[in-house]
Length: 316
Length: 304
Image (cartoon, rainbow over all chains, first blue to last red; front, side):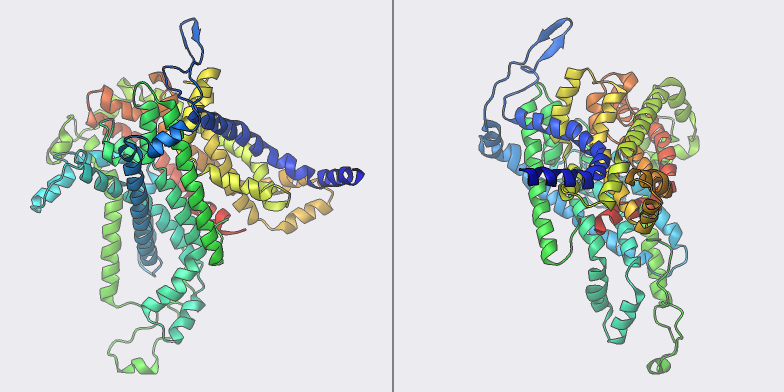
């Protein structure tokens, strides 16, 4: 017993400063994140909607009247009637959206970064122009895309002059998805490009010289010098890219406005739609979607980290 | 990670190697043929055009006086005017929204950095039980889809009477900016040599004194990046702002802009002008910090 007290005392005096200095963030995370998260998990176990949640009308306060339903919401979302249309179809679209977008972000970003890494006149100028989509807030540029993609807008005008089909980008389900991917790719490439450019410049030139001395072709130099050299940056930006794209709200929400576009909704915007875009607001279902989404991401990150570790690199 | 340094020695090497002598044109290693250079310029120029075009386009549309000008852009050239900008500034709530955005984004930036700085230092310099879980939770909060917190937050805010208030929105934004700033600042503190801390300790400073007197002043660029980043995040945020700010005199710019389309009968010309007015200051701000931003984003994660 005394040994334990002694140990606690020693650890207190050793770590006192560390804990005091870490406290502000821990408190903020506890109050602003953990508590609402707990509340959210509790809501998923109830049948709360805007009709039975306590609210105040004038001077009358109407108390909560929702009840505990256990795991019913999860069961309903994942396996209930119509769960394919409500959840799984959006799930498939969300996963393909994430894979396609991050793939495009990464490959286009890497291509541009490699071009910018060459000795070239005016490359600072190119670089400044190329990060414009990242610099301008996306809620501004998405409206520009809406103007360009609208019926009779610039994109279709161009396609028409080339005698190509002119899909209704903002209404036709398949074209909506293509439009969403297009706009998100446009918005997301600059971040990848700039990060990968930083990574490229950190690769020692000697490695390339050595590879060339050994007679490595351009492709082999790319495959065996560039890609491994970029790995620390790659593992981080791909993880961030997946998380951001999976949770991308603004672009889809603003691109299609409130005209619903049910097929193009990814899970995040769909969950928002359930919670705030309809009446009565289905708080419980919306929160359930949220928790499921978070679990997907955490599982993904876990596997990703393990995979990185097996390949001897960690993202954090 | 400066972005302007060349690969040393890429071009400085003497050119001719014996095997190349037969070639009419002798190229040194790392040099391109003219064709390749032209191709490179074409590709980069095209990409730059695609990158810039939508932004220029909305500016161009903003010059057209009529609502439907975006459908026949050719006609704008003949009648371009700045009337939309003056209308937006004089006859809409733009300036109110601008002020709101400024308050909320400024508040978020200050709050985030104030809270995060000492924690960033602690996780950068000190080993303590709970360090890894803390780092993990900082990362995990970046993963939260908005739908995880938005419902319970709405519920809690409504109970506390914080809906439709600046403070409420700042607190909501703190859920993402605080962990992010801590992460980013950790990366920055890692770049400051630990010898400085040791010297401070030898001179009799407490760990907190070292942090406050020595490290914080040195970390000013990092702090600036964290401030800017939080500011830009809060400035451009849509879902929370449009859910928690209920009355139009509390709207931020992001919400105000989308309300334009529905309320003012699709006045795209005014909307375009508003968009331009919003974009100019933040874009300028972004260009001030962009170089450090990337380093901060990836450095914190790539090390440790």
